[in-house]
Amino acid sequence: MLGAGAMGSLFGAALAGAGHEVRMLCRRAEQAQSITEQGLAIATSTSGLRVFRPAATTDPARIGVVDAVLVCCKAYDTSAASASLPPLVRPDTVVLTLQNGLGNVEALSERVPPGQIVAGVTHQGAYVSGPGRVDHAGCGPTTIGELDGRDTGRVRALAATLTDAGLPTEVSGNIHGLQWAKLLINAAINPLTAVLSVTNGRLLELPDAPAIMRRAVAEGEAVARAAGVGLPCDADGIWAQVTEAARLTGANRSSMLQDVLHGRRTEIDSINGVIVSEGRRLRIPTPVNETLCNLVRCADRALHPGCGGCRN
Image (tube, rainbow, N blue to C red; front, top):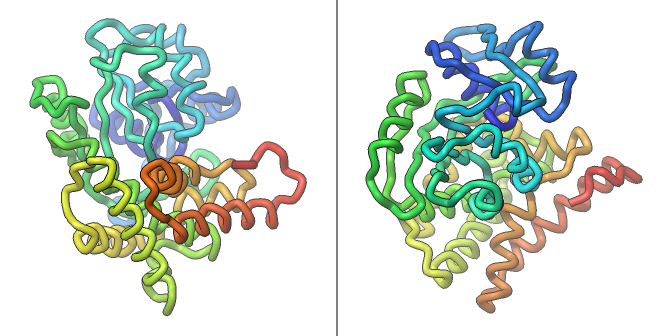
C-alpha cells in the first residue's frame, strides 16, 4: 500500500484480514511505528472496532518486489511518492491507482511503464478519526480497468482479490470515463463540505447547497464532453450518483474538509481545478467550479493564517 491515510488503511486492513501479505509504505516514521506496534483500528457500524496488523515501513527497499502496488496517497503527492516504486516493481507487477482527481496515471508513468498501471475509482467512504483509527463511514463499489479498455486476466484477478477481501470490485472497459464521473461527484461534494464544515449528508439538507452542487456537475459534464470523454451517463445521471454518494457516506467528513481543518494541503487543484483548467483550454465557462476553488483556498487561509505548508 503506497499511502496509509484513510483509504490506504481501509484497503490494507481488509486485504490483511483476508490473509494477504500486506506492506504499508508510510511517509512518516512515527506512522509506520504506530501501525507496527498498535495495528490499524477500523471501526464500522456493523462489525464494531477491529484491529489489523499489516507490516509497515518508510523504506521501500525493506519491502522488495511485490505482486501489486495500490496507490492511495494524495494526488499532489503522486509524483514524489512514485520515486518509491522502482524497488517494488518487476515487469509483471500491477500498479493500481485508487486516488481522487486526474493526473495520477501520468505522474506514475514517470517511474513505471504505463502498461503496468491500472486505474480505479472507489466509492468507499472512510476517514481518520484518531491516531491509528479509521472510521468506515460508507460501503460503496470499487471499479478498476486497464487504461486501454482491454479485458485482461490480471485486472479480473485483482478485482476478485479485492472483492474476496470484502471490498466489492468490478471491471470496466471505460475507466477514464468513470474517473471523470467520480471527479464530478467529488467536485460537487468535497469543496462545499470543506467550506461549510459539514458532513457529506448534511449538504443535501441545506436549502441552497444542492443547486450549487448541481451547477458544478453541469459545468464539469460540459467540459468532459467537449474533451471527448465517454462519460457513463448524462448530467442527470451524474447528479443521481452525487446524491446517492452523499447519502451513503452521510456521516463522513470528506477528505477535503479534514485537510482544511488540519491545515493540510487540499486536492482542490486535482478535482475542481481540473474542470477549470480544461474549461479554459476548451473555452467553456466554469464560474461555479472556479468559485469553489477560490472558496476552499480562502477557508484554508482563514483557518490557518501564516501556514506556508498548507497552501494549494
